[in-house]
Amino acid sequence: MPILLDTNTLTVTYSTKKVPPLDGAFLSHAKDTILKKKYELSITCVGQAKMQAINLKHRNIDKPTDILSFPIDDSIGEIYLCFDMIEKKAKLFNISTKEYTEYVLVHGMVHLLGLDHGDEMDALEKKFTKRLHILYPYRYTV
Image 1 (cartoon, helix red, strand yellow):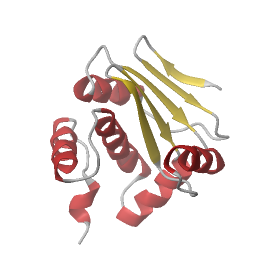
Image 2 (cartoon, helix red, strand yellow):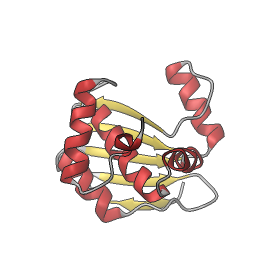
Image 3 (tube, rainbow, N blue to C red):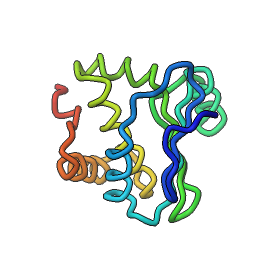
Image 4 (cartoon, helix red, strand yellow):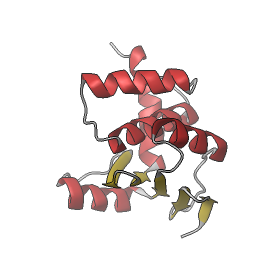
């Protein structure tokens, strides 16, 4: 798999035909802000078929999704991104792919902190999106 970014604590790889539009400076800053500097994070960008297979294997849901997060332990985690799904979700929110990608990465990192969907997770996402100066897309929904 080609490597987009490789540091001591953050690695980004992809197996898709197109290179995912990720900002390494944003990724490093977001990881350090949410998960802390010593946390080791691997981000893998995959296509829809691969994402669907991962989702089926780990969540028993037979469809692709935009992001999946897997904590390995308290200081190591993995995130899988599917840019085809991210692009579709961005259109639903009527925001740019970049804006939704930044948000969904925050969402995935908050999952790595051990939170599941709900009020506590929403509050942390709002806190981190504000701190990182990025869009929280759900404020635009009815």
